[in-house]
Length: 66
Image 1 (cartoon, rainbow, N blue to C red):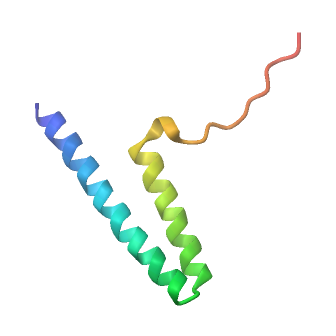
Image 2 (cartoon, rainbow, N blue to C red; image 1 turned 180 degrees about the horizontal axis):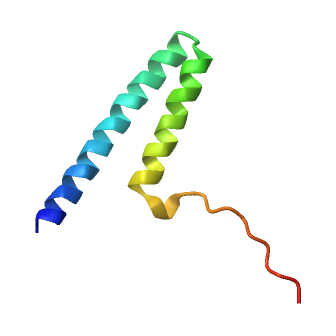
Image 3 (cartoon, rainbow, N blue to C red; image 1 turned 60 degrees about the vertical axis):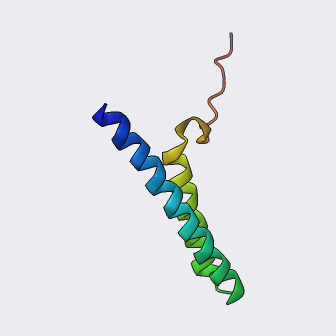
């Protein structure tokens, strides 16, 4: 049961981080700071992939030829 509570707390904290990063991205866009915007978008990508690992991009591996 403790693991479930911790998992729920982790999801809530990650959601809160995304909210803050979205606000930071809006500020970066408003100030036309493309470097900061790039880093914020990268942080958002990392956070989303940690929150929803099934949605992470899987590298393409071609099938062996027969």
